[in-house]
Length: 119
Length: 163
Image (cartoon, rainbow over all chains, first blue to last red; front, side, top):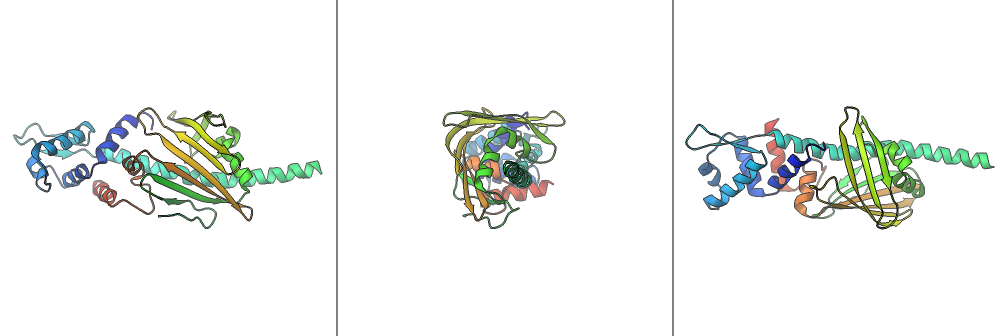
């Protein structure tokens, strides 16, 4: 988990923007050119390219080399890492609290027997 | 969304506002004991372990304002996870406020633990405050039972497609 934190941070900040999430959702349907990707947005080409660069740096999309249009494709690996991390965050507290329930019963019983010993 | 935990054995997750997430749990013990279990290393090492398979080989907490704390968890395969921070406020047995950070590249959160007691049971409310809405949403994306931010619901949809 620790080794993955740099990648996770990059993924998180890339996902923090709604335009970038929309781009990823579009790419989940298949490869697309920059022109395809900018179509739904009221945004300049350079603005879209800036978002694409952020996504690329986060390893979330790849740029085709062969085709002249250099279509972008989605790389899902970092997203899966985020999903796993967030799931773990919640499981952590659920599992810990369950253990705390049992441990508190143990502490209560111990206190009672200490009291008993004193009397 | 506010959160109310009603019965023991259930963790209630909530998002009281844009920057916070809250975990509420009712524990069947007086808060004096809960506070001890939450603030003494020998106790913490017994329960604050997350899912099966983790231990906490290092657990230090200097329980006074300005004091530092550091917990290190380890899995059987050697994977380690560490977090640490500073104690801001401590009022036994009802309040503990600490800062928490997983590493230099992570946002620092403020964690507030409030304990209230009623009829021998304690309601533990842990509030984690993130520096921004974005940081919180990123941390929680798939972790919430309710109160899902609609934009993250779209990401969920994306993740489903990818499975």
